Length: 180
Image 1 (cartoon, rainbow, N blue to C red):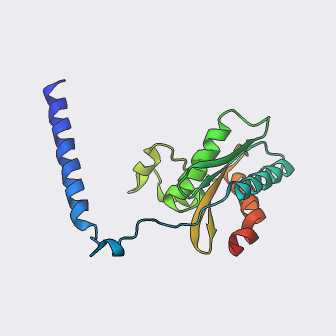
Image 2 (image 1 turned 45 degrees about the horizontal axis):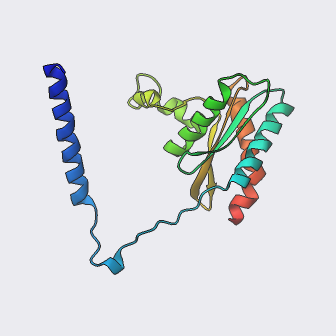
Image 3 (image 1 turned 45 degrees about the vertical axis):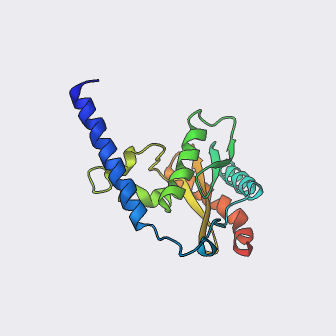
């Protein structure tokens, strides 16, 4: 390893240790084991709801003459369902997943994020993070104000049409999301 690589590695170790120490001091410490909350219970999308949303989005795009792929992820961005029209491009399943992942990760629709992450702007670097897709077609799925998942559509001629199809998927499960 070169001397400069060793210095970079040492600096990274130092920064990592400092960050870990800062986190350890910043985290609240329970007074007793009885006060310790050991399990988080958070709402998340079911695979059944994901499938209904994906089917509705795919059907809506087909009615509009677009051949697409649709992916639905849970609240952590983990893939639940992907459907691909047989005529959709080979890139569309991965792009649909990345759009859904991006919407969940940044808690915003990908169309909204396009302007917020414009190249040369203060948030432009976000576009270079792994798995990020800054193009229309990714939307969050929420239930009672909580993020439960995301839907991404890829392959329509425009991000606006991808958004419209994703919205059709959301509408298909909206009542179930509101009722919990």
